[in-house]
Image 1 (cartoon, rainbow, N blue to C red):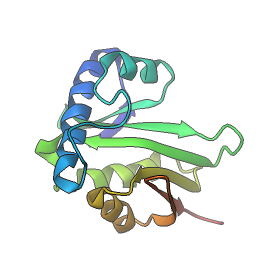
Image 2: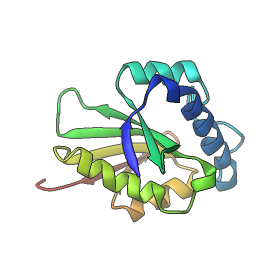
Image 3: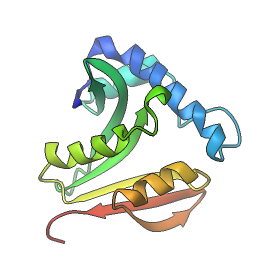
Image 4: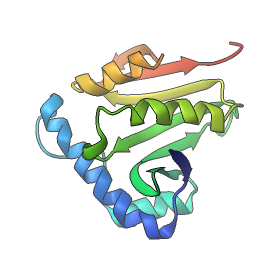
Length: 152
């Protein structure tokens, strides 16, 4: 498996995978089909790519998912995981866990990872706890998680 900055040729496929992945959230508490803003927009994924925030997750030379990463402008040792999405065909096969482990190796300078997930999403809350994230607060329908690595 690999994680690399996405290419322009991958943005349409990543938008489709994002849509498919987030649409499955209806099975874990989402009140309806949908996802985060622009989750299904190729144009928006291209915009994220141009900002060097969109990464492709590949296995056996096939795109199986993507993620969005945002560096904290003030704290260069902090990274926000804006989104991670895996093609539903690859759910529950360890790819998400492996991707998160790989991120820690790709960005060894990052000692604090943060993310936000919907409060209703049982699947993501359990996933993040399983890989070492700690729930920091719940507010406005979202749960905020953090994971610290290395020295505090």
